[in-house]
Length: 208
Ligand code: GDP
Ligand code: MG
Image 1: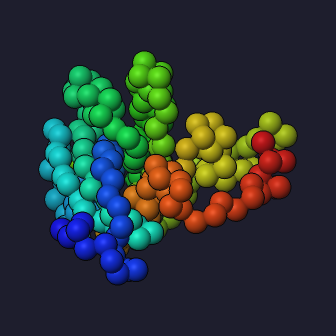
Image 2: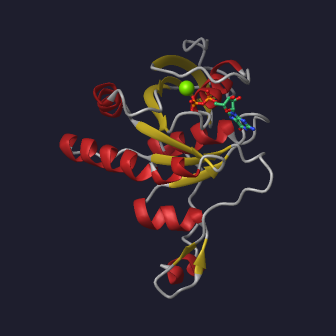
């Protein structure tokens, strides 16, 4: 854990924020693997269905200290009340799918609808990142999308336009991009501390 008192050194985190991040997605897509990797750097090989697990992670990002509360939810629809509570508590959400479970991508619609409703009820918006996990699996490709002009667009652009959310491909098996999920969300949650934003791509604007 950080010693928050020691703020003299230029390399020591100089302030401290608490955020709750909830992780949603279909069963078996790798939610618990991602969360466990983040909190303990261990990859889990066995799928043990989760009801709901809660973790606390202390981390620094851009020289600021954070206490991150992570809610790892169940991937089944059996627990709508628990899911709703997790959405209410969340300052940011991670929605996970994996290409070996094609239904897990279509189920994102329902999670997004629930998150949007919950945010509307509370009159607030939360950043959402959609994660395509198991990117290590060979011979699987992301779904294809076209814009209103019939031009092919990447999934990243499609999701940004559809839901204004971030997108990232990860592999919990090889610890690929897992930290980036949380770093990107922290940049959204604490924009003062983030790197200067690049100007929106001209091409991306045209593709909309
Ligand atoms: P959850 O139900 O979404 O929490 O999924 P789990 O984290 O329990 O993972 C389900 C299964 O997928 C386990 O057997 C994991 O080892 C496996 N798994 C998780 N992430 C990856 C990954 O990035 N690549 C591969 N190949 N397998 C993964
Ligand atoms: Mg799980």
